[in-house]
Image (cartoon, rainbow, N blue to C red; front, side):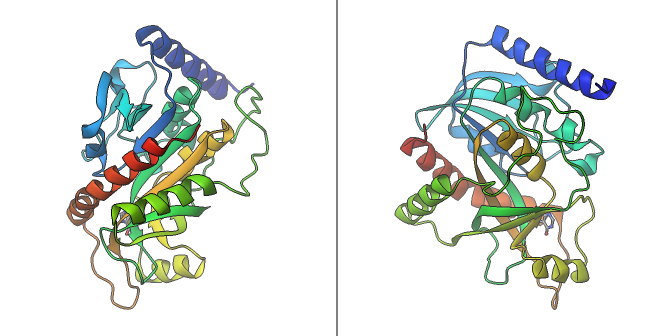
Length: 280
Ligand code: HPA
């Protein structure tokens, strides 16, 4: 086995053993939050809060808009492990490093991961502050967390991705969004780019032609690991800005965070509603 991978396996095992020993908590659901979306955790009935820095091998976030905490508690009546803060490929991490927290948590037996991100809209029908449920993705990050030696205890060598996002969870979310009166909840294709630079008008046009409805710099690595571990995935993009290649406006981080915070209220209501309904 290559030694980097052997170290990774050991790191995952040590972190999982640490969590088992520190807390008596078996999460049913992983909730992974992104840029400006950490507030969703405010409504959690908190049982344990662990800074990433206190958990062996969890990487520290280098982005100010991402707090690094693992929160364990109850949300919508379910035992939820919240990853508040995330690592990105653009920070210099490998896809394997980025996904260590999801790999560790998936050792504790959850059945579902709900993952949220802030994204740029490519579909001109979208509006800033709306939500897009991921129906599918394109991975344009030139890395894959499953690359490396085969490790059958974690999942199959050739991961089937015919249905990366669970249709049942997505349908449930669409119905609950309508019942909550949330406007503009659509389903679409997310494309993950490496970043950290944002798209040019020509790249925006290209990504749209590739079939993407929204673009961001995260999520796909975590989804690959969650699917590898057999979890069902619900992905939700908060559409922070909409990029029109023919009338391109600067994309500013402050605007992205402000729009994400606005939509975070809708996101939180939707996540809680989906959790309350249950998916066992
Ligand atoms: N592009 C890439 N990532 C993003 C964007 C965008 O326009 N908005 C929020 N995250």
